[in-house]
Image 1 (cartoon, rainbow, N blue to C red):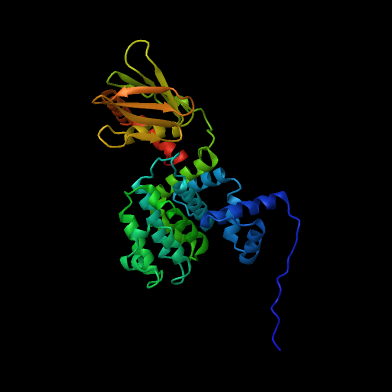
Image 2: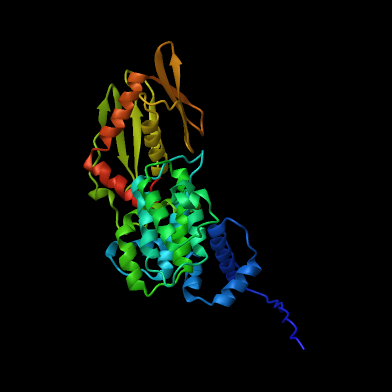
Length: 375
């Protein structure tokens, strides 16, 4: 007589609003790994089955993400140990930072930061317990296909995903980090899933492996936080700071002048003054706006074939007027357009480069990068 298969029982419970929000955060975390939606009841089932304390800690940390990241930054910069849950939270925001890339947000990730994510993944990958598992195929799927070993690319059925194939693919992807960021859009998922799903011998070992990549990981985590929350990771000032901050001197080139006004913390605003009497003065404020304006200037190079820029805040383009090139930009929120000759456009580009040579401005800018991330 054969045993009848056991039927799954359904348990119906009433939960508090706080627990519902906790399950919702866990649901969002799982969806970020696969890009697929999952029900709240399925999340509750998984949490009950796994009963993992670090996963519950991650969910709790994300109830106040800015506060959690401020504490993670404090510990990271002081060289203190981060718990596994804190590394998972950091990796979650790194993933969000890498995936915050689109035609409306084309600001590129630096090759240095991208390499840091791949190196951190490989460092953690070498520490995981056990050999090959089902996640190796997942890791490969998040990397550019043409970075996989040739035999893998020709016939996927002949060679399974193995740790050696994963290592070689990551190494090749690392070698090509100067290529467009969109090729690595999902590379951040690997680090997040690795830390969340794999087993490691201890927090101390994990910290030693990941510590060298802290600067790159933090820049991308802060970027991910900004795109999700639209606010910087910034502690509240305890004392008035304006008294201690020296003024930033104006910079001029080709008749254009860039002047600065200090704000709270590392913030500052800029005023771009055009040459001649009674000419326009164009204000620029807030780190995200200034960062995109700088990226736009660098991208629209008169010596390159690129003929337009479309970002979150600005639209710019090049036109040909006879044999001369002209460059125009406008803010997307008001439509006001300015047009420049190639000579004047280059003067503005040079003006911004010179401004960022000032040590006080550079110091403030580096502080803003830590608060907003690599935008």
